[in-house]
Length: 110
Image (cartoon, rainbow, N blue to C red; front, side):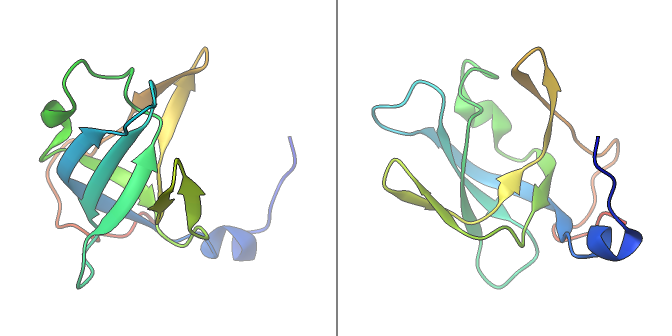
């Protein structure tokens, strides 16, 4: 595993986001279109490979997850993703992480 310096780590802007809406991405078996409040003026659209994590995307609404907010936007299935939901990898399947207690959207991970 490659190591990074603390200065490189500080470049990552990871904040807690609250899911405002979640819906399947048309023609995709694994992608969800999430609208997430990360404490900014406008919520972000994040396209995440989480469709197989839940039978009903609506169960994600109101949940909080760590979000990498300074990732360069990327187009997935014609939709712009403005960040990344961070999850653990369990044999190729994402496992969502969340705070034990609710925190304000935009709270930094330090």
